[in-house]
Image (tube, rainbow, N blue to C red; front, top):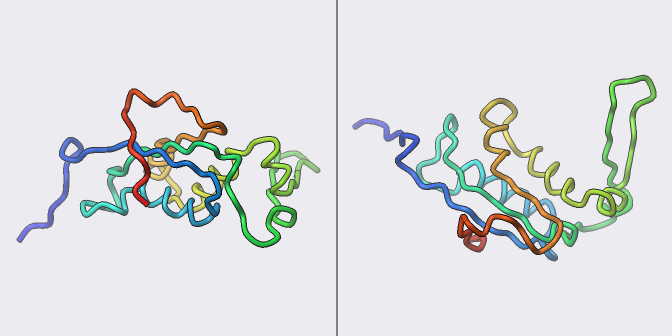
Length: 142
């Protein structure tokens, strides 16, 4: 019996919409990462991009548990001496709320060419509107 390997045109990549209102950040990120990698499909293989597209709306309304709102620190480094910046989660939420979901999902993706290609299938928007109605996205299955 041969091992089944789907070819690029043999599977369908769907579009899903997630409303992040009152969803816990880490739990949501796991489900998104699994969906854009294709781990929720029976045809999953580690070396192919057979996942689905995910559109996240209302990213600013995502919830975190515990004291992460004031104690979790995000770091940026410009590459220059003294170029490290530290910001807490509430500051990041006020300035770039989509960054919270983007960084949480990126930490769960494989690093490399395939991981970057899969990560491009994630679209994050702060409000309830998104420009992907032409793709007829369904509601997130989780």
